[in-house]
Amino acid sequence: MSFKSLGLSEPLLKAISKKGYETPSPIQAKAIPPVLEGKDVLASAQTGTGKTAGFTLPMLHLLSKGPEQRYRPIRALILTPTRELAAQVHANVKEYSEFLNIRSAVIFGGVNQKPQVNKLSQGIDVLVATPGRLIDLENQGLLSLNRVEIFVLDEADRMLDMGFLRDIERIMKLIPNKRQNLMFSATFSKDIKKLAYSILNHPVQVEATPENTAVEVIEQKVYRVAKGKKTGLIIKLISEGNWKQVLVFTRTKHGANKLCKKMISAGITAAAIHGNKSQGARTKALAGFKNGSVRVLVATDIAARGLDIPLLPHVINFELPNISEDYVHRIGRTGRAGAEGQALSLVSADETTYLQGIEKLIGESIEVEIVEGFEPDPDASTEPIKPGQNRSQGRGRNSNSRNSSKKSSGNSKNSNRSRSRNRNTNSR
Ligand code: ADP
Ligand code: MG
Image 1 (tube, rainbow, N blue to C red):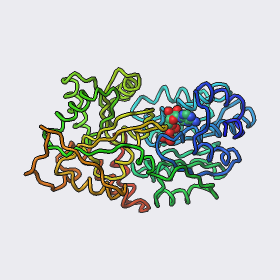
Image 2 (tube, rainbow, N blue to C red):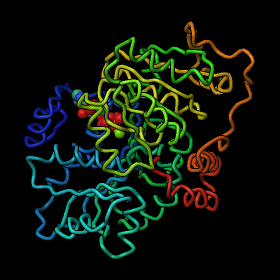
Image 3 (cartoon, helix red, strand yellow):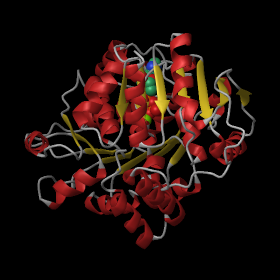
């Protein structure tokens, strides 16, 4: 199987080989042909399997075959849930369209709209956007979506988790009825199917490697440890293992900052990435992590979601997520592209029920280890920490709204409420 045999044009093949890809990934091989045929496609495959190119390449192919436009209306719209993802997808669009006469732009919130508006006014073919800023600029009359031919919903599952359902519905009303729809998701829940049913038109459904299988090639381990000894243990593991690139998850932004500081005092270069950091700080942290100048990236779930960090050898859960599916997303950042990965979790007594929920979800029990000097506290309560309790304010609100958006998707009134609460925290 080659990219050429999928029917992609020469300029795209040139960009693909420049990028260093040799063969299409399974989801690309399955998704590209029906997209090229102009069909609606619903695709699901785990994080890190190359979904971005799965929709971007055939989309660019179709756009470049269309008639040359003097005035350029937005012909393709790609929605993503977070700023980082929007920036990443746009970077991909730019790389793949290098040898085509296609112009693209990206818009997201949290930064001055002026440069984005300037770019839009020059005329672009492909727009990558997060929902909030898109609606905002549309309301101000600064962009028009009435010529969109291809609509892409990327990371659709996260969109729903983050309460973007109402925004998606609003955006659908702004684009023409006659269009091609592509929906990409890491998971394939009932809610996703419901959304797909409302957006897509007789979609071709493609799936690569049943969800969660990559979990099997990842070495997972739990360290039972006293809550107060977690920082000491994580520093010991990273220094003694001499690990060079470690992604660490914390439950809260505050926790991420605190841990990051402790790492730095212990002589380990670290950076934190979460919703309270400026866009510049986040981009810088991620770049440092990718180029090796930052050994440890401490992240919260939403900030890390979908980030393109290739071949990550170590993921550590400093705290377990209270939503079991997030565990699978977190550890999905290791063992990418066939490389081996290790996912470690530091678990204190109050996280016991979270651990049980995770083991139930993945259908196996995770090996447990106790490190001398970092034993669990036998007297600690196993009462779970409730979301919103002992938390920084932002996190408490966020976890509540995520729960309610899960429960209430489909109920527009509630979704709307949880959506507006999410507005300020959606880029956690
Ligand atoms: P997903 O959206 O499924 O999480 P991405 O599109 O972010 O995955 O791709 C994950 C990584 O795999 C990126 O670093 C990307 O450059 C790389 N990649 C994508 N397609 C290929 C391919 N055909 N061959 C090699 N690497 C690829
Ligand atoms: Mg993706």
